[in-house]
Amino acid sequence: MKIIILNSSDEPIYRQIVRQLEEMILKGRLVAGDALPSIRGLARELHISVITTKRAYEELEREGFIETVPGKGSFVAAQNRELLREKRLDIVEERLIGAILAAKSLDISQDELINLLHQLYEEV
Amino acid sequence: MENILEVTRLKKSFKDFTLKDISFALPRGYIMGFIGPNGAGKSTTIKLIMNLLKKDGGQIKVFDKDHIKYEKEIKNRIGFVYDENHFYEELTTREMKSVIAPFYESWDDKTFDRYMKHFKLSTNKKIKELSKGMKMKYSLAMALSHNPELLIMDEPTSGLDPIVRSELLDILGDLIQDENKSVFFSTHITSDLDKVADFVTFIHDGSIILSATKDDILDNYGIVKGGMDLLNDQTQKVFIGIRKNNYGFEGLVDDRKKARNLFRDNIVIDKPSLEDIMVYTVRGDQHV
Image (cartoon, rainbow over all chains, first blue to last red; front, side, top):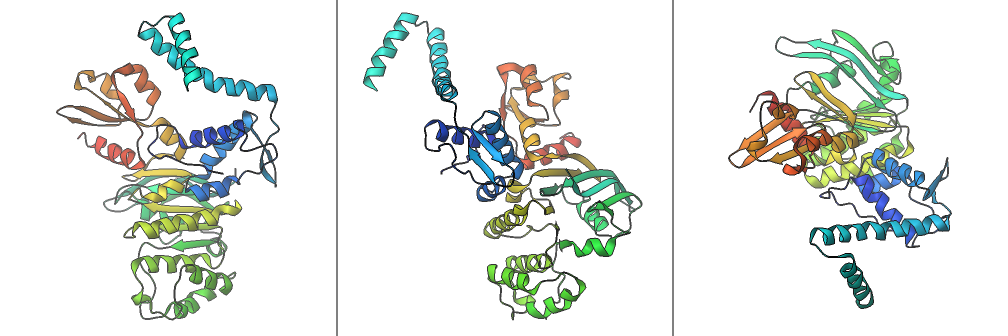
């Protein structure tokens, strides 16, 4: 497992952890039942506050990505397939919104944008 | 959450300095950094906690017990690292240990040996032959060998190089793995140690400026930068401290969202370091 913390980033450290673990789960690098490092163990390894890792895990739990068994630790939760697909779409949606906003601000029409998308999808 | 250390309305007056009713609490299982400039009252507070100074008022509870009434029991459960070397320079590390160990009921030579080995310290070296970093590690080995639940350190990092400071981070991280131990350390350099601090208490001129989780502090505070045209008597009020130069201003706010609503897109907001918060607060006071 790889988690990289960028101190210079605008993104709070707990969000960086949440995002990276989410990505690993969405991409299938971590699967249901996989054990995660303990909250305190991860804090020690990354030289960050226990409260930061705790907050990251709490958020992942809330989103249904992981579950914590008292006394045993935290594990990747069985993912609801529908939810997983939705989350994956969310990621793409977010970037598309960025592209749409850029297109609108530069007076590029919907048709032009769709054409561009088709073209790029084939090329990339 | 159970508090391992609780300071309530603590008072102490000297001729030229007063600790003004300070309060803060450290929950069990966490690390608190006690930051502030020189002369802010950090050492005084720590000496009061350790009952090395007599308080004028207020209450200090350690392990939920009055720190004077249960002084002996409490001190058996605290590890204390002083800001300067308080060992006999002529003794070897092993001899010094033999002087200190009998004071602690739960002293464990195995733990001591383990730390000495881990820190690569020789047991037959005289204390005066140790480098500053080695003395620090020796103090830690001495403070941890009776398995304390609370480690209190007064300025542990001053004068240490970054490598030793980084090692200290590992040691503290190891220490709080079991969720039962806490660490309270003071520092005037907001050093790398802040990385691992869960809570930060900031003292300035004998008063507590803030005491909160570090994450909350860093989430809310911000360094706002923009052009001088944005500043007037009204807008200046949102800043805790502000620094103006010929090309614009930089100011510390404790509520980023409020600053964003006020100035919209005319400003940029930078992440503050604890050092920024300390400097702007102290200098803001002087209207620099």
